[in-house]
Image 1 (cartoon, rainbow, N blue to C red):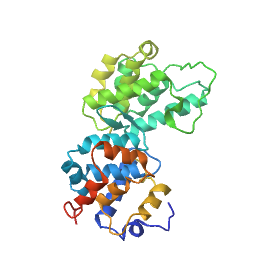
Image 2: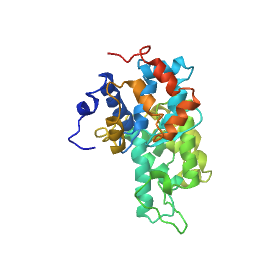
Image 3: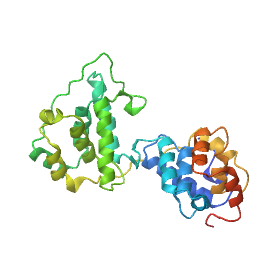
Image 4: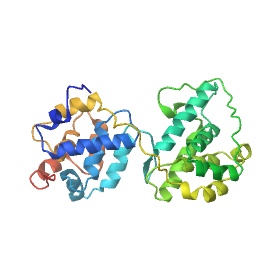
Length: 290
């Protein structure tokens, strides 16, 4: 985003609540470890804020905001695993571990990021007390062997070089985190997911799922704080905001998503019966907080 363009510049023509929503969108992008704040982050916040006019209009249309948000999350940039019942981001410690796993695989000339890479990086991301529990459970940080003609590149989409078992481990980690009602996927879930996805990993690391789940249960919630500031706004979002009609509110945000230039969001809203006509009729009925 052009540093000369401020949040005040972008929202001065609109309802005051839009500035608050944009700050919340930036916080969401930060929590999802996205490189920039996108339109999808903004729409998700509009939908999930039960006080917003947009959320009230969805409920009026018998659409479930949480279901709509799940689909919006699936379209959103960020580091997360999307399932049929929930989309969970990785915790700060887990996100660091996944990047460290790829860096190690690339430095070793590995053909792929394997479950071993992920487990060892997740173990390093744990706090000292949790690592001590792993050591007591028999953990061995062994050598990783990855055979193949490809070579991991420490750049680009993070999961592009992950092996199928490693990807399955992430999915299993999400499932376990969701069942435990965690709000994100932490390093402990990654370790257990790797062991569940790769039957031979226990022999290489000295760990079992039972030992991990029992010994590391107190550490399942990652307390690592988010680092840095929220990411910058994407240029596409800035241009989109500049094209909003004067006086727009959260209803106006959803209405403009019906534009042909945002076909995925338009199709999503139509699937949930949130038509442009419904949003127009909702003006004057539902209002953002003042």
